[in-house]
Amino acid sequence: FAVAAAAVAVAAGVLARGDDDGGGRKGAPPLVLDLGVRTDPEARDLRRAGVLYAHGNRDDAARIFQRYRSVQARIGLALARWPRGTQGRLEQLSALQPQSGAVRLHLGLAYFWAGRDAEAAGEWRAARQVEPDSIFAVRAGDLLYPGQAPGLPTFVPGFESPAALDRLQPPAQLA
Figure 1: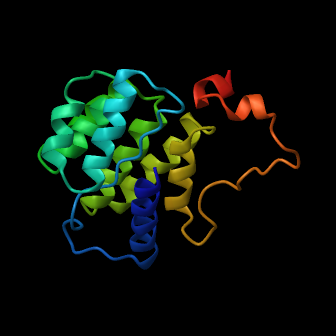
Figure 2: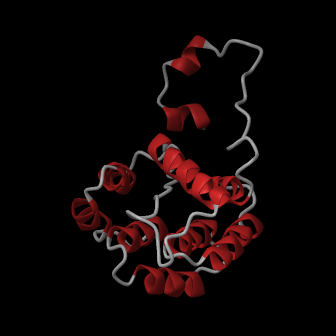
């Protein structure tokens, strides 16, 4: 997650400066996964693929992403194949999942990396609209408003958590 946040921050900085080499940007767009506290095999695999992707091992990441049909796996696969058909795959996915903030954020990132800044901003606005309470909307806001503090404020409770809760795994803590 931190790697994706840093990559989105870099994208926001480029957007703020207006840098555009005329046909696209170097490298591949960042990938933002939100798997919550899931610990199932797919979630573990997608996290591993996300790390591979962030480190530039896109072929290895693609082999993992292609095992699954979830929206986030399909987004990961499309980006791992960057730029070969990525925009078209994400556009198709957007047509199938128009209410997915994840799809809209990543389609915007693909457009941005291809030098299509106005279309990117439109997709980021859509991501904020269709899923306003998601990490995808937060990241889209970071890109749309690069002069603002990124992300959401960290919640720090004014009380200690019960020791029994601290011993539980994240899914059990949430439950």
